[in-house]
Amino acid sequence: MDESTYVVAMTGAGMSVESGIPPFRGVGGLWTKYGTPRMDGYADFKKDPIGWWNRRANKEADAHILELRDALEGAKPHAGHYALAEMEKRGAIQSVITQNIDGLDEKAGLKNLIEIHGNRTKLRCIECNERISLGSFVPLYAPKPCEKCDGLVKFDTVMFGEPIPDDVMTAARAEINKADCVITIGTSGTVRPASGLVWIAESAGATIVEINPNKTKLTALSKISLRSKAGSALPTLLNALIN
Image 1 (tube, rainbow, N blue to C red):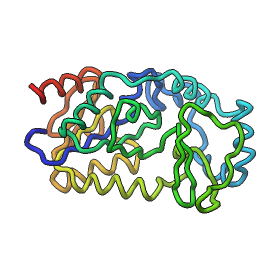
Image 2: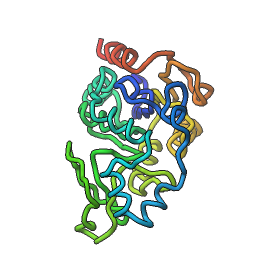
Image 3: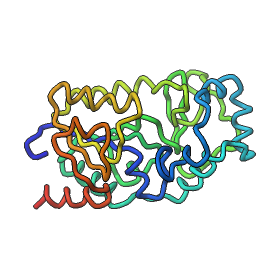
């Protein structure tokens, strides 16, 4: 990191697990517990957005969504989140691309943050990508059309079958193109298109560093693999950088 000029971190589900948010896959995963959901959620939403919101308000959502929602409401940033924010403040990293929707990176103080799968505390127009922060407010009814373009408004989180918003992918690719070092943290490297960004960086000559307690698809790409959880590895890394 000291030898690099532009360091980008990419965080995945393992980062959130340490804040008490269950993963989707693997041991203890929501899909392992409840079964893999249908992959056409976005199409269903677009066919009947008002009905979708009504089902959500009446807690008729899938069981894995209800459990995830409860976990997200009580989740707080951990030491790893705060260490990343401090690294950014000190200029040791230039940006963070996260696959998580929990908003914990933002709460920890990260500024140059790209939430590739959206943020559960925001609404987004699917036409112009205008976003509205909700804070702790949870809408019970379908939001009004977008004030800027009259487009359909949904939660910012990306649904199954929904493309990653163009502005997000453009921003993420721009950061990867500038990176000469990419640190992957708590991600298995299995979710596309986010994971593909790491291969793009590596093929362009960037040094890949992995922080994960388990071997992943990214391990073979990585010059250094630290078998550790983010909550302990990132504060240690921060101390090494400033001492």
